[in-house]
Amino acid sequence: MADTKPIDWEKFLSESRTLLDHCIDLLSKKNHDYAEVSDPFANFKYSAQVAGTTPAQSVLMLLGMKMSRLTQLVGNGKKPMNEKVLDTMADLINYTLLLKGVIEEEMKDYS
Image 1 (cartoon, rainbow, N blue to C red):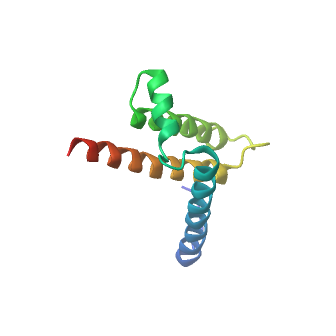
Image 2: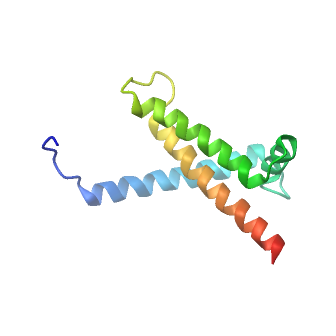
């Protein structure tokens, strides 16, 4: 293992807070653009209906696609030309939050 300087933890936390703030802002803006006012998960429900899956599986599919993209961006050592790694990470964070919401809504339907 190469000698690497330990990360500045406080800087890491600060940058993580900035990223999470960006994610929440992006989530809100995309909800405004893509979701119905009465149902923020309507597009996932619709895509699930078309694909014959559940809304959670629909979100999981999108998470899988983003993970695959991240693997291509980071895993093979090539320098991205268009897609930013941080943008893909933000998308992963937001899809994870959306999955949480979809699952919570599904669980509420069963209780």
